[in-house]
Image 1 (cartoon, rainbow, N blue to C red):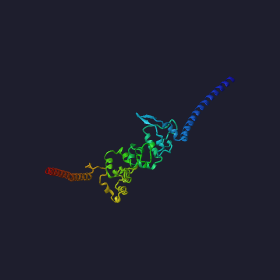
Image 2: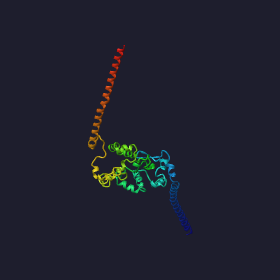
Image 3: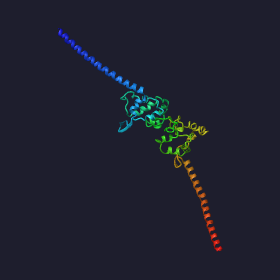
Image 4: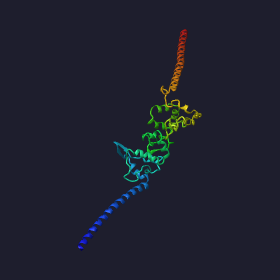
Length: 310
């Protein structure tokens, strides 16, 4: 009887011991994970961006995604001098509060980064999403026009891709051809080339974050709004209304089909230039001929006079 009780007691004791050990292991693992997570998060928060740059400031850091090498190196100086230089990296990059990071570089990463801009730029993001560019399924994002995310600088800086003197080149990355060429050959484009500050650029006419088709009533170039868009520079245009849309805006003199009035004006001026060259070009020609003839006559007279004196 007593042996049975001793055996039961030993069995219960060993079972309890193993249960306690198992619970201890599980609880310890959970607490260790939480501890490491909070320590990493605390370190990132306490040390600021220095903690991030200890890895991402190393030249050559990269990953391979879809057979492409994606650089994960961030220029610390460029970031510190950018408009976002005083922000924490984790404010934009969710899931990076701990290491290893809880986020992955995949097809949705670019979209997630664009969405992170909305945290601070909510109104602008809403405008952009309703614009032509915003409806292109991620083909155009914030960084397309504003430059690399970690080096965005203010628009009044002449190095910024969205600076008024650089915006034409920025738009050219997508709008190569007639649109850009016609602007650059126009009075506006030539004035901008010489850095005249009051000349309109692409964004002055089309707006920036809320570019809409001309047939959209809310567009800055719609029949209802184009007069107001031109009015700041061209007084009285506000009364022009939809008549301002009758002509072709982006064309070059050589484009007879889309810009016939400009083409015929170009031809007339070419004719006038040719006429002027032919008409005025004969004056120096005949003057040179007259001069040479007079010179020849003088030489003959001199020769005759010399012969008589001998």
